[in-house]
Image 1 (cartoon, rainbow, N blue to C red):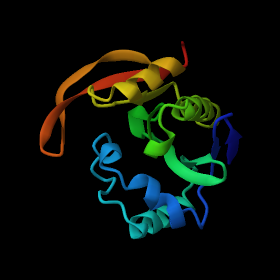
Image 2: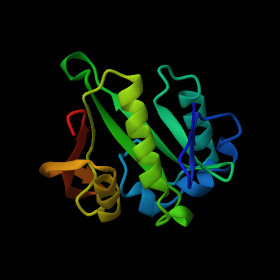
Image 3: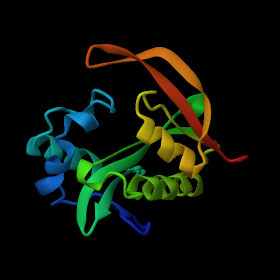
Image 4: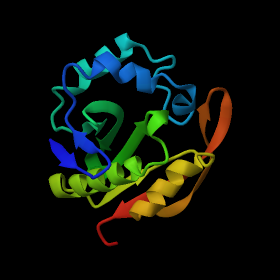
Length: 172
């Protein structure tokens, strides 16, 4: 899969991405805003494990955020099942060197459109920590609507945190 978004390309992961991915992912500031399954420190071995996991994943739901031919971040969907099969959660991260350039906004818009066109979804949502104002601004720029605050719903780095619930639905 390949979508040109202007400031970046959203594309399938490929062998070779692991060579430099850890350089962008090994950042405590990134880790502090992601789920614990994202390791810190993030090593080249972690990058290799990730590439091996995602490269043959079907359906394809995880993508590289590529800037000038290099994977500098990731974005993907987590499809739900059973009665929630019409919903997916979106998650993303970007290397700090690329923050503030509209890259994640473009990537999120493209993956949101991709998700609705490829899967029978009525809803894509995200649950950023309330303190992650940059991610919240990105969601709002793309058109995600705030549905509420999930108080004291997560623990990260030993701290109990609130999460915001943002969603984009097919009736928007």
